[in-house]
Image (cartoon, rainbow, N blue to C red; front, side, top):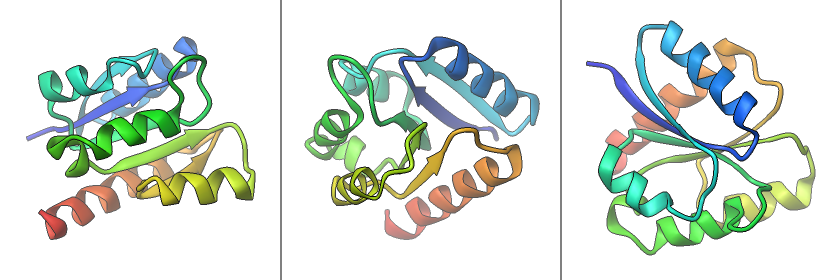
Length: 128
């Protein structure tokens, strides 16, 4: 059974490239979304095992999206991994306080990405 991954990143070309890389592994079913404002409806429709979430997006940003996920029972049960182009300590601290599982800085190599996804799924299985 393939793991379901939801990517939320306003940089469409990056999100689609990441989607292709994950799907080519054969282990993942992936959906990419380019804004976070509808994250809860996408979450309930797709029911992902893990969310890969860009931190800085126009409009509803990654931290706002984390707040929406934390107010939803399915959102609380779905691990979030931040994917960001910024490697700032303050951003990382805020993201972990918002409840994320891990923080990856772009560009991300395939082995690190898949290892982080699998650890997040293991965490989810232990918690819920």
